[in-house]
Length: 201
Image (tube, rainbow, N blue to C red):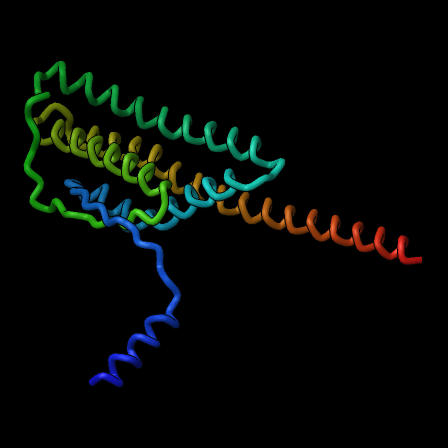
């Protein structure tokens, strides 16, 4: 037993240490938000993390990335806010603000907080779920019909799909910028080597 314990200790020491992270539990009431999380969470969190990482580096591309990030986020959040304002106006006009339908399919989702970007994603996801709840409530209460419900979800889809598209676009942009940085570094190294060779001559 003692020998086995010693062997286990040796094995544990050889394993790389993993940074601990928190696991956050959030409840998603709508199938729309649940499906969105399942399909796009890794892509969006990865893109946001790449942005944060790139911004921490010393690079002349930082201003370009920051401007691009703010511009795309403003577009996406602006579209979501327009949808939210339209839905809230309907809810208030019908005096439904104190009501909420029961969602039998609500699920608890566990999300690993591996980086600060995850917090931003959770805020977006909760906003998406809230908007989907409002659409369903208006439909259940008879304020909007099935066609209007479909149109409302189409508008929400347009806004939320921009998150996923933005993520893909940044990942491609990130790869391009990293390749450019590597090329610039190699060019500088070659130039330095040539200078050293001339000095030796």
